[in-house]
Image 1 (cartoon, one colour):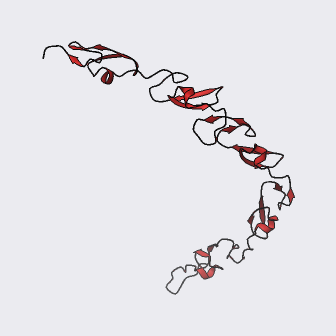
Image 2 (image 1 turned 60 degrees about the horizontal axis):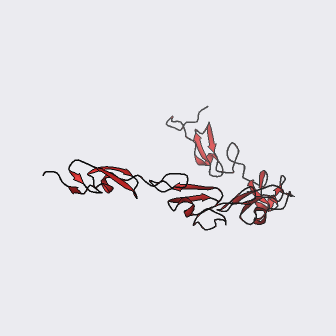
Length: 215
């Protein structure tokens, strides 16, 4: 049976049909309540339990849920339904040879190494010339003929060459530029430091700067 007012119109439900400020959808005779967070029941009549807190997890984890039903996300080094069991001693910087951040316990950990160090326990040294924290024995700019950035060690340098330079140690200089070394009046052969010009017809000189043709 559908409730109607004196005019014959269907009567829409209201907030008063749902407890605890729930939203009502439908008519007086058939409606659904959208309850506020934590409330439940057909008419939102069931009040929520207080939210749980860290003390419900023995202050060793994050509590998710309410006092009646919750889950504990335990901190590193603890386990159990309420994080009541200690499973190891937390690791520290010493476990990473003082050269990284340690995550885990003494029994099982991972090292996030500082710049200049690598390895399971940050025991291996490498470096980038000029970068703070680079380890002793790191390669230097001169290992790349001062023409590039050196990454690695003296024993095994890796060169990132400046634009134009080539070679494993950036020893090959950039090719010369006809517009620069030959004044745009000839073809250039060689490098920027040692260039030879093949001048166009009518031009002469080491850099093709002298015009001897007819104007």
